[in-house]
Length: 363
Image (tube, rainbow, N blue to C red; front, side, top):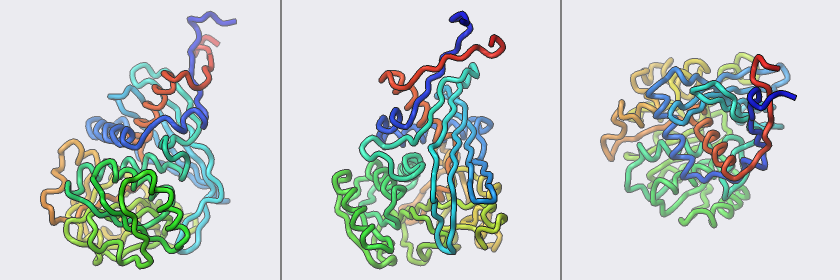
């Protein structure tokens, strides 16, 4: 048996260990810290990379870290993806896998398998907590302080977590909910009512989502624009989440890139915030690349979320301007910030299973 000095202890955390540890407000703070760190030292993060099998299985990898939190590593997840002309669906989505190394020593601290979920909600959609928290960071820095009414396109887990994030950052009095299925709208409102202290309005007209609202949230599986940019009103903060990758077009699954926004939305926004500018280029993300290629906007209109957080870009400077957060994809700056905190909390809670492995070179 190996001597104790030649053993490293790695914590294995499974789905049951990580599912009920963190709240949305804490996740928002962590994601903000992650993107601030990414702006300070960009080399610690890289864009999401995806590979596809001919049968439609997609693996997404998010490499990076946050030096201030002492973590570097990756998140990897796999899913089966299928399409019709208007929507993307997932017949099967596997548990995500996190690898957490110490950013100072390179020692492997934890292997996490499972979706990290908001403790009040549980599982609803893959990566819903992180995406919602990132939306919350955008609202914190870009939405007007006096926002009271929010319009929401979508009634799935992504939309639910964005409403939770919004309620953390602004004193919202009313949420106006639209999706094409009345039953989905009813179930969505029923689930949110005990979680959020606000009025919920069930809409059957997509136009009404943008009318007399302060924040417009779009959280759907759509492949095509969901709303008309001419519906937007002065002073609104707009969020979309679909960040397509051009592999779907190259592989023959789609004729054109996925997008929830139209060109007019990009044109009317004072500036456009992305999570990671390089991802727009690498993945050929249609929601921004198509209006750039059409000459509707130029690259100088696009800034990164980290630049807003750090103050490198001033963000909103007028209550009348339209701000647009293209929450285009996740990065390790957000995912590992949350995962590292959950790992440390699980240590305190004595969760998980310790795996003893030999120090490299001593096996």
